Image (cartoon, rainbow, N blue to C red):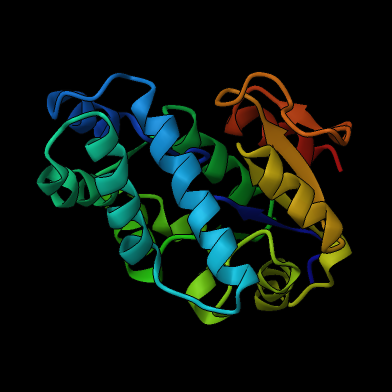
Length: 220
């Protein structure tokens, strides 16, 4: 039995949001609108979770995007076409080789996502990297969104490991902190946020990309 495993966040960590960015700009939105949309979506899912209610990610992402577009005096009816771009994301260039290296070292990897299982599997298959994952855990299985501890604990259970034997790799500080609070270790990939945005300190394990995060995992 392996003594260590890894969970990977999906959107923004393994997969570049550039496709969606292009669709938003084609709709007339400025480059900053993508961050506004995702921040508003995260606020919405955390609020729903805190209130004890759950809706799948696409059902939240579309109305939050409609709101962002409306505030920009753009047609909210463009939202479905932009949201559909979440199923056509490409992995960051370093990801395939990094995951192959991790698998070659015998460290099991799991995709742990706020998105749906169906869309996540579609992305992994489309990118040709599904074989490097032992499974996919979506928040659908828990009925609550990250950073609720139960999501991370479900990921560890799927790997057959205790949380302290698992490391989350994520490009979102809130996700890393959530994993830490659930008993996992974490590696923050800083290419998205650049500077740690929380009033708590990051862990000592920080990497510029997924390839760098895998090197940290292999040194353990």
